[in-house]
Image (cartoon, rainbow, N blue to C red):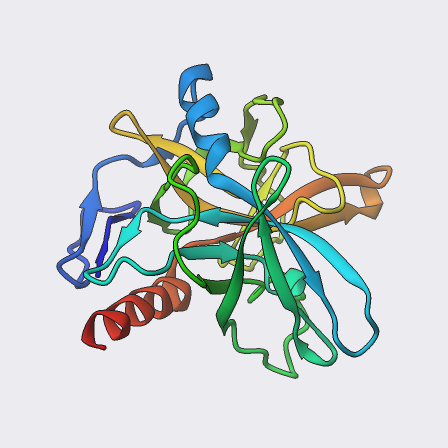
Length: 247
């Protein structure tokens, strides 16, 4: 299976990674231009996930990756873990494009949950496999690992038409390097929306929006929080894809 991945690093040191992951020379994020946003927003789908333990349905977002395999019988999505799981485990998820159901999820690889973890956002991600291919009209987006310390502007892409650029926010004493704190407008139901930057003229997903962080000491100022595509996240994604190739 082929995946197009880049890894952004804020130093000139060599990084040992699989051959499919290449080092990029960009050290700051760049928001999307209007044309790139228009193309990229179509790569975001809605997830309607029903919890079999209580019958409740939950809405979130997922991004379709530019991944292709020899069999070509499914697609791979990235999503927020809390959108596709509950206390009873995995939810039953269907995929929606603009207005109609376009597919369903048949397999999930979930972020490991450490009971000692006190940050609900730290491992809030999931890799999803669809039953069959989604419609060809849905954009497949490329992905890039984002190392800690990268600054600049990003675009949080979803199916609304708001393409306002936002920036990476520096917060004093923020120590969790797995996360990107950002100023993108957000609301409930947008978890799983991709954080996208331009790399050599091509939009790349570098994180997934997972929630909000409230600064109580600053008049309850709210910032968005996204999980970076890095470290264990990318290792798991690459292993998932390589395992599929070997089937």
